[in-house]
Image 1 (cartoon, rainbow, N blue to C red):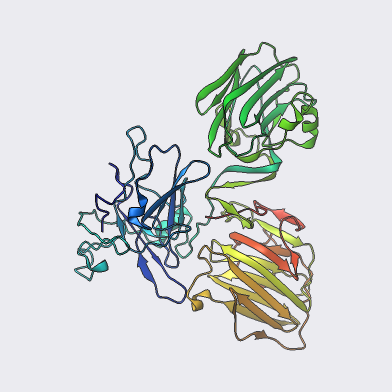
Image 2 (image 1 turned 135 degrees about the vertical axis):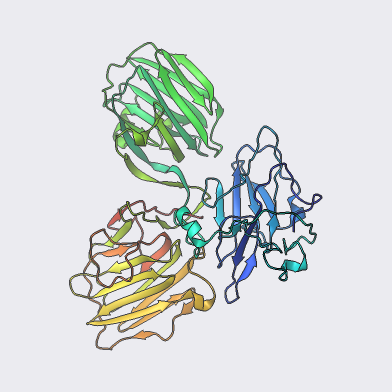
Length: 563
């Protein structure tokens, strides 16, 4: 069913033709769900969020289409459009054809016609299918949805009109794999990120070669809601001369000091509104200027040349190490030197990305990816590409499972295979927990006897890879292993010989994966875990990056992406 002219949100440009997706409640059979969202998954519902920066004009009367199309304005001013449901909205089931959004001639195509899950600004929950509505001619006159000849929608809107549609593009699972999706999982392999996130106690450090103090140009894109914080700082060893960019009561301040001459420029407007803003600060001969979002905010003249800057200059982004911060306070008010809180991306030196200048990846201290779509507490283990090293934690350098142990955690995986926990050693005993083809498996050896138990969530009508948190509790009591997932106890209990009660491991306790090239006996998969873990405890002892012996790779502390 197409949304009628009197009821639809209209415009001149269609967003997409149609979308199909399915969901399955726990214990219920699969049901077809059709909505405006890209992707497909047979185990969950779907939501699409399309962020519209600087949108002109409101979306009109979304209540007329119930849960089909809703919008809200986020705290940072962006318009967030929900199609097919929402975080606090009932989920629509059916087919939506040709959704439109109003726009003006100066802002065409605010919503792209060919949206894809995982592209910037678009977040999907579920894997519905774009342009996958089955037409009557395709179904060979089969019974159509909701009893209408047009077979276009079943759901809360009760009117239908026929419309000629192009042939659908049916996307298979293989079509999704190159985009980072497993069609059997709700969340993509990799959470969408934009630059680096700074939390007020860290920084990034880079080097620029052959720096010319007489002519230079730096640019970055930043987003914050904080009123103060240092974004950029370059200085000689004694901080006699500097180039600095920092926030002062929400405004951008640009300070340059060469040869005893200091110039300070300040933006007219505030930029602590949680929007992305493009900042350029440069010197070309005697002219120094500060530009925000393509407009010159302030300009000044500087005649002195540098007396201290070497050819190869280090600089800090997002904060300062304690030593340069102490010297910097001689020229800049200490309260303006607090470390930045927010996100920074697209850093360029003389119009070249810093990553392309051959100065290395930089040093990052307490810096994490800036996730699009929001965050929640938890440890995030990134998906491992073939060319990347493993991301894992060494919770303890030597761990003995012993006679009794209780392990609890919550998991939200993005793939169906991955090492959650592994410990072995030189004794031949081991204890491993892993996702294997969507099931949670526990394998243990003690006294030469191997015990194994597995939780298959499909027996309960759902998937562990459905984008939700799942509670896990593993109890080892002498020769018995009890596995409980989402309050479901695996029965019968796995029970070994009563004489074998001590699991005498003595190796490192790995979480999320193992070190490349290291052999841990008894592993059920070689894949690294991808997704989030929270509330992990060993006999009530918390296990996280702050308590671990070492953290390897881009594992975030207490920051887990929602999508």
